[in-house]
Length: 92
Image 1 (cartoon, rainbow, N blue to C red):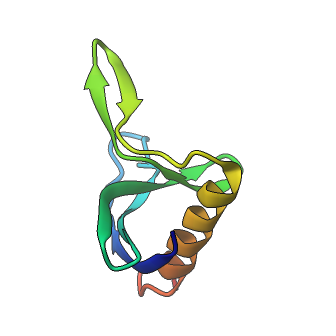
Image 2 (cartoon, one colour):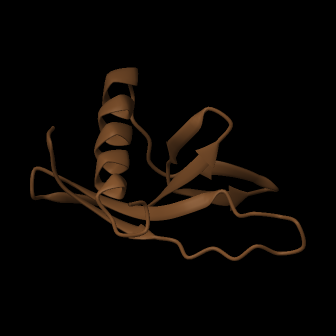
């Protein structure tokens, strides 16, 4: 399935007592104009930006609700979300 649309919603984070939020944006992706996935998170990690899949808390742990089944799809999603984020005013 091809990704046909990506929307990125920059997160306006605030520093709180020497802690800086690593969350940079939320994202929504659409596959072939027919399947939407919301609430992906764009996180600033030690090695740069990465996409965290939507998850929910289950018994004290977080479990992904949706996730790619192979590395190629994960990379495609990350590249498209990061590219779209780089086009936003916040990142420029």
